[in-house]
Length: 394
Ligand code: CMC
Image 1 (tube, protein in one colour):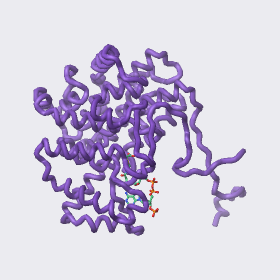
Image 2 (tube, rainbow, N blue to C red):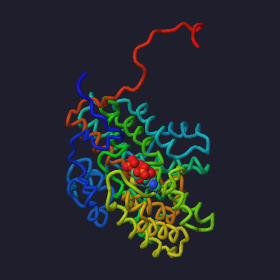
Image 3 (cartoon, protein in one colour):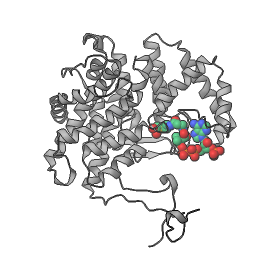
Image 4 (tube, rainbow, N blue to C red):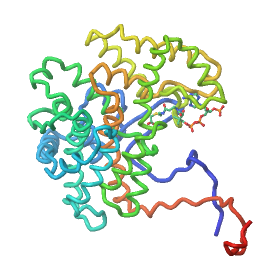
């Protein structure tokens, strides 16, 4: 059957060619379609970055206006989706709800199975998903707190509209407090793509079977939920809160993380590909300082604990040897918390941010006519043996 390379976790396998995101883990470089992440985080908006990732270039004003208009046309979800939401217990995690509802879109829009789609139909599915995700995300939260669902207000920009559906602030409040909108916008941009990470590879693998975009993205949401992936942002804040409750002694938790008999890991530290620093973490750390300052929350005890952990980890031999630096999730939770986002929604925000990346990668897979994904294995089981009747088994 030929030679099979054993590469657990695909640490050294280039599974695809891609023209979307460039990442250099040694140098800490991240670019979307050639544009440095630092410039996009500073100057762009999330919707513009979504367009860039999906269609390959920054939009002209006319292209952007048309894209934004299309997105506003699809931000409502089918009323029957409310019935599905009603069936979830209020204790349901919003990520579970998000994955289920995104998957349910295959039922509402059956013309989404990949090979039969025209370019226009494919675009319609893309726009639908970008437009509906904030509504579904906000409603998954509303469901968990038993509040009435808030319908989108399309005169608001993408990020403000999401905040409105979450919190129903008077709309003027966004203009008065651009810090909140701009911080969230920045976080979404920083999460928008990250080449072949676990959830994106999942989206591509499912998509490679010619499955629908909704089904593929729903699988990506589930992968992202895992605590070693996007779920880490919720775990980080829960860890910081636990340290605070425990009296704030960070050295105790560092010792636990280093103990090989203890499964505890310092959440928000380490990365499969960044071995010197995570460029997103640098931007987020600065943004966290600015946001806390602007909101008058600079004395947050959680921030202090985070800074202590970072400092200790950066000077401790264990972390230095293993090149474990704070990753994107380490400071994002502190910002989300300062913005009033409930902890259970942190990973949902990651999913909202990652959506254009998933879509762009799924689209690229189709355009490049990639074959179905089908990894091989190294078999380690029994050699051939004969069936034994039940009465004769030991
Ligand atoms: N705390 C303590 N030790 C760690 C940590 C940590 N956070 N991360 C890795 N190590 C140790 C690990 O025990 C191993 O030690 P040894 O060589 O002695 O056995 C060594 O470092 C290498 O770790 P690994 O698990 O083989 O590395 P990996 O590339 O498979 O995993 C990772 C990368 C991100 C899953 C891992 O660093 C981790 O679990 N971090 C905590 C979770 C986290 O923050 N995840 C978010 C990642 S960034 C955003 C995203 O991808 O969604």
